[in-house]
Length: 357
View 1 (cartoon, rainbow, N blue to C red):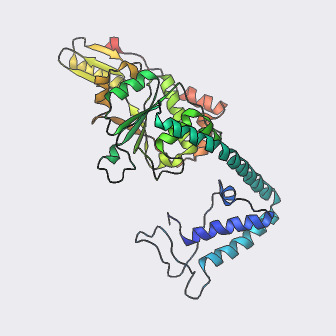
View 2 (cartoon, rainbow, N blue to C red; view 1 turned 120 degrees about the horizontal axis):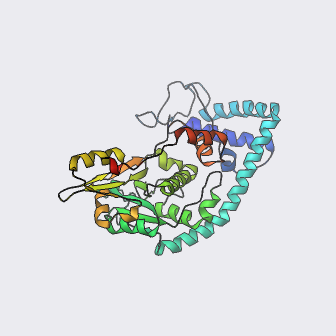
């Protein structure tokens, strides 16, 4: 049941009660459950579901003559988990350390959140980072809500080009100043302490979940050079670390912009990679004019309108079966010999083939 149900509610409740009883402390339920990964399977006779799709269990009893789901799971967990903790004190100690760490982080966050929300509220009245649009994804009845897009750019020149060429009805622009912080291994406290992250969170309206997300498409729009790729990685890390559901639900994209413009007096072709450029050169013949765009700021607003309009190319950021923690540790953690070897094995040098048409 993808949406849980009475068995999951009973499991969550029994887990908290058993942990509190074992340690003799009234720890906060959220601190106990933080980072817990568990699976529960129960055999209910004549199960009742809350919808035809059977995604949420609604049964209150294990069967016609059986105990309630809540009692059955509560008694089982209280006995088995309590026995396990007594037999494995080192595991119990690790759980308690995790709970205390979560409690400490939550208390630290509470003070920071209040200040950050006040700061974001003031900034939203005139947020110099955000050039907003008129329609938003959480305008449930608006016919264009699915078109709503937030472009996250770096630098004034790039944001200027997109701002000048965007559709003000459905396209917004959030401009970063320089490279964002590498969030790997940091707690969510950094989202409130870092002004840009706090304003980005406020612009997206995702502090408490995705229910009121303001843009259907969150698009990272950076230069196609090494610095631009680094900024992409840092932003993807930010979303994976603190808002993984935004990625899982298919809202995060990379904007593909042309690397080359190939033209003659009669036709202009925009090319997104070396092979497209070679094809364009062959099509136009007779030494066409070739321009390589080194950054988004070099593309005029008139041209940029073509790349964020109906023919926009978006590359979705998708999560496979990999664990997020392992993925971030490998690519964004310490520079290990394994990662160095991976870079060496996959390093490619792209030569400019303009002179070899």
